[in-house]
Length: 289
Ligand SMILES: [Ca+2]
Image (cartoon, rainbow, N blue to C red; front, side, top):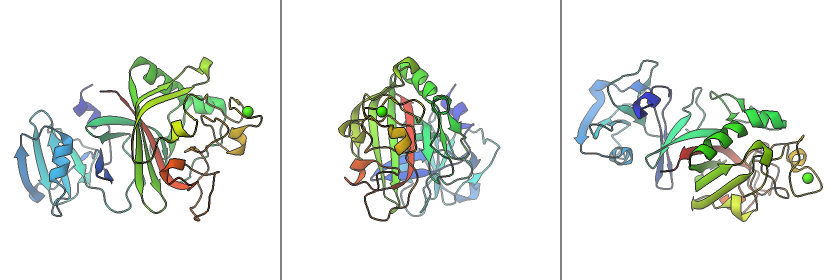
């Protein structure tokens, strides 16, 4: 499937700036032609086109990879079910407060010119994460809201191709950070869907490795594979790759940030070296370059 064909399945656009790095999602829609600010040729990368749109006048942009052409617009795009089918992918700048709270959300994102598939998405606490083994195996929720893509899918994708993992996190104060692992593998069900990551870079800290989750088996309330005598999955009300138990569980219950240490929440300890409940999280995977 070509990149352009993939674009046609995506419904909503956003671009998220995270400490100088940009995330783009794709808008299926068209900009008002009269709002065209200009066109630049010989723009080889999507990220360069996005950079051209950094000035105040620019509200959205479109990029044609084959023609290496970048267009900038003064208006935001109008979401549409009809594909413009003009060889361009359409993007718009992130506005205050935007993250995943769209009614229909793109399942694929661009980050540093790579395309990512969302495998875990939490933003409003509407879905319980306190679920059984088979639910975590097969996935739950749907792409219009919160969801978990399923451990078996993660296993199949990561064992068939070299895969990277991107974790995007947002605090209640609106601070966004990310963790990128160049290699990401989920072992088979026989091996209890063990997680293996390496090659960290990012701004949120290497929480999976430094707090002991790396190389751990997955546990749920009905399938305890953690390192403690108790069931971390029961205590933390969620399935995860527990060690004993967790300092880095983004499947935990959604809680407000009251400024106090709160372990039983969406937590990524190295985000602030504190058990700060986070508001939003997304895990994404992508074939390694
Ligand atoms: Ca145990």
